[in-house]
Image (tube, rainbow, N blue to C red; front, side, top):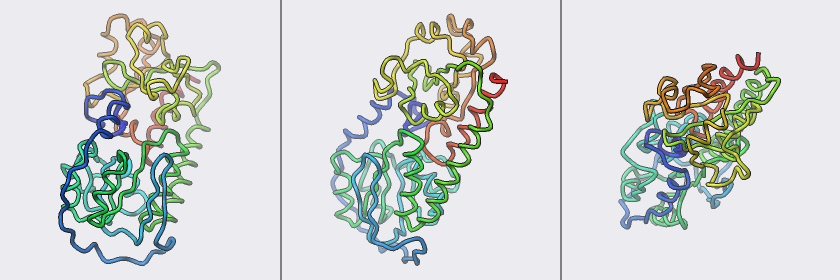
Length: 325
């Protein structure tokens, strides 16, 4: 993720629908063969709860973690950010090729899409964090080598993201930090929303994931952030859950809807900008273009259910405030 500017997972890959990326991951067969493991790092005292601990994210299998993990591999950019935010960074020994934040994360050529158990096990993990595991196959393979697998599916709401912050804290021996992170993130985002002026009339938006007009609906995590500001999503139609919340619109549909805002989550990956948008046939008539409301987002921040969601909220607030004054 991903969210990945439709990209739940890979923010800089040219996206297709989230459903397609998920299908790619869920269709990956688990490779045979396991590398020999070395002893994990010495266990540290757990000051935020005792092990073993059983944790389970919404929509994922439960896992019982026997002792504080000393060697963690993360194959999810959102999880990587959360691990560092709860204070588990020193336990992280490898992250996937799309985990671009924080800078000090030990980035490797591991992939969360094309999962290679043998490559994962070469890092001698005792805990591997992923965002999907088809039929529990990866967990079974890694488990034979003594590594446990924690599945953290993409959050579909802010509450689901906060719950994952707490879960990551519990799973890594940082329960208090995880709970505090969830509380602080919730409070900070709530304050951003409360401090943002409310428009007299609802404002509409189009969130662009790529130049072929894949987008999000309000049924997604990204959409839930816009919802907090009272923005109306032109992609919702009669069923926001259609296409898994990641439909592809036509240019004609977007022009006809005439959104008040166009948010670009494809500037870095696909060289889109307010200037390129204005040059699209018919788009110069859009209210968003005429009112200079084509907003460039950091596509990593706007694609991940991580603590940096507050930065995403600030960007939305900064866009909405002038239009509401």
